[in-house]
Image 1 (tube, rainbow, N blue to C red):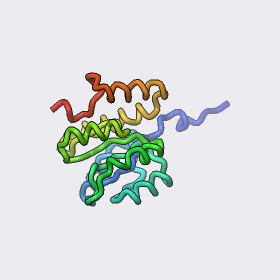
Image 2: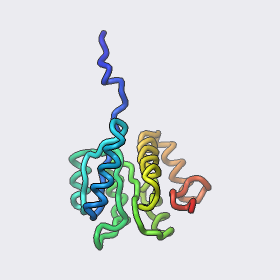
Image 3: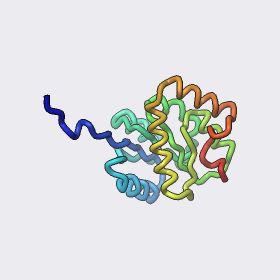
Length: 160
């Protein structure tokens, strides 16, 4: 039996980018496209309504989401976004540690500040995808660790 070599290659991590600023979306797209074949952008959205529609249509692996889309606070919508099956990485300029903790408790895998080096975001996208593919038991253990504040299971912004 002949095996197609391309079927043995790992599929790229499919990333949906959600931010209300065109220049941020443009820069993130260029960053992710530079990671081909490891990562690919499946779509972009500027509003939660667009994000939900794109999640349904494209089924990304990872959702990179700003905490604020214009006047809309996205934290309240994390459980519904998480229900899509995509791992969520919050990318924000907000330095509110309590909001970061709430984001992780609400289902985000991590929080990355927009002024972090690009490599941090790329690493966290990869890590979020790995978590998404982990067993349910492992996910529950990690979530419990986050909720109880176990060292090492906190948002990336706590190292500052």
